[in-house]
Amino acid sequence: MSHSVSQGVYSPLPQTISDTDSEEELHSAIPIQSAKLKDGKHLNGTDLRDYYHLDDVEDTHLNGFPNINTNMLDDAPMIKDGYRKPMSHIRKLFFSLSILICFLTIVVFLWVLPCSEDETCPSVSHQTKTSSWEKPYHGIELMGPINVVKGVTGHSNNLVFLFRGDVINPNPIQGLQNIPPKGGGAICIMGETGKVAWYVPRQRLASEIDCTLLDVDNNGDTDCIMAGESGLLEAINPLSGAIQWYLHIHNTTTTTIITSVDFPRLILDVDNDHVNDLVTSCSLNGSNHNILVIASGRVGNVLGTPHIVKDCDTVHKLEIDQNFLSYFCQKGLEIKKSFMSLHDFYFQVFNRTMMKSNITIKKQHSESNSHGDQRMIYSVNGRQLIVNNQGRCPGSCSVSVQLIDQRFNRAGNVMWSYNGTDMYGMVPAKLTFKSSENNINSLQGHVNGFILKFWQWYSTKSDRSYNRDYFSTEKIVKRNLLDNITNLKLAWYFPVVRLKRSLPLVDFRNVSVTEQMLTERVVLITFNSSTFNIVNASQSDVKQLCAQNLERMYCQPDLSLQENSVLIDDLDGDGSKELISYLSTFSGDYDEHENVKYQLQSSIKVIRLESELPKLYEAVTKY
Image 1 (cartoon, rainbow, N blue to C red):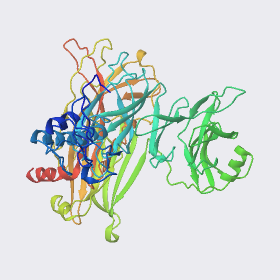
Image 2 (cartoon, one colour):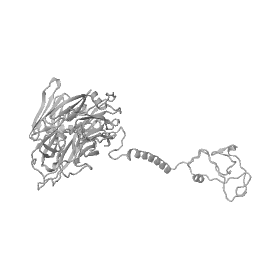
Image 3 (cartoon, rainbow, N blue to C red):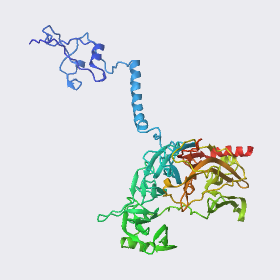
Image 4 (cartoon, rainbow, N blue to C red):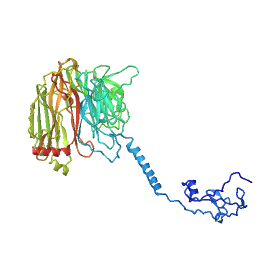
């Protein structure tokens, strides 16, 4: 039989040869001659030689196929078992590089690409340290207490504030986008850099926020509860700024609008969803503010039937005390404190007795101090600080401060005192460091104390009105931590503005606006077992714009909204305390035509106390 195609017989290879080598490489490395068949004929018709089985084994199988009685010529090279061509140096290099690139690809996609510069993804064991910083924020007035919330894993905690926009200027300069005119909201600042993490603008002005009360979604971290005017009550995720829920009433028959609401109090879990529920006073559809409601802590809807307190025109300042609900009841001009058992209240709302709950109440929201005459007492390590503000400013107000040693039955032993007329002292922050050997040496044993902020006014240009149609701007004048140090002698005698804690709802377009110049001082009071130091830690100039109507004076920044503007906390969890303080002011001044343009702005300052205080004490010693 003749064949038109000349071909050789393929000789199967031993399995010891790597299957990664290409067929071309094998042919180039081992030349294979044409096999000869037993009948003496080549496939192309030439003579063939006898053949014999490989290894003289009849049933040999190669590469999974039976031996078909073929063999190579006697002069063909045999391929030994285990033979492998060695890799060249260049091939080894590229093979190693390919493995390295695989690992780099995994690292890039897991730890680099998913995160931005501000939200990188370090390992859980890594923790970024907080450094001292100060940043301005334009177009807003920060207000209320400072809330510390959990940040991104591996980073410092964040700071949450309330803010409001410019209520004085008709065309204010906006620093944050989408802030409604005369509105406000909440803003979150990254604790380690001062950058804005998120902010929630609102048409309805917020007045209170607390990020320590309620874990809405049971993820282990408490959420922020924000309340304000016109029935504003919301739960906000502190990490993302997403709205978890808002207070609402499910009613398919009639439209019910919550027109005013107080900050709520926690109660037991009454709807068995494993989240504490809330009780608050409110008004519905413009009625009197004398309605008590229970809201779900998980979703924010009103549960049961709202309870109307018919004996009161207004109900405020709810408190939960074991088995009783207390509140202040106003009827005409009479104000009294009233009580109601929780069992009776639940029956009025749900028409059934109170059910048992496994969820406990760990903490309640604390009200800010009342205004007018007030006496605040704070204690740290056997010392007591008393801040007594009296009267109403401007015109008739004063402040007295006393530091009293209560150790060793020495009650009433006044270590230091100060009295100032036309001056106001804000809510102090308690200072307590670890009594480590390093702290005792570097801080001279002064590991306890207070930080107290004062506002003081001076009358330069305070009575001059400005033209509201022309404005200009300039930077805020500030002094650093070590500037203007004073020791023990505090002689501040300047007028001050004393205001209520309520947000102004005044139309400033038709009233006279005046400028107030003042200085904000942060005073550090520390003590050891035998001595104490009082130094002026920082000082900032503030411009305040005020408008007078028939009832009272309204100002921005508002003193009553700045009373809790200082806090001491450990932001990065390293055991070292940071001082967090904020300040709001207008920047700007008069030009040669007696016209002025102002821009509202706030600034936040974070100082690592344990690293900065030794420098301060050294400067005090030199002074």
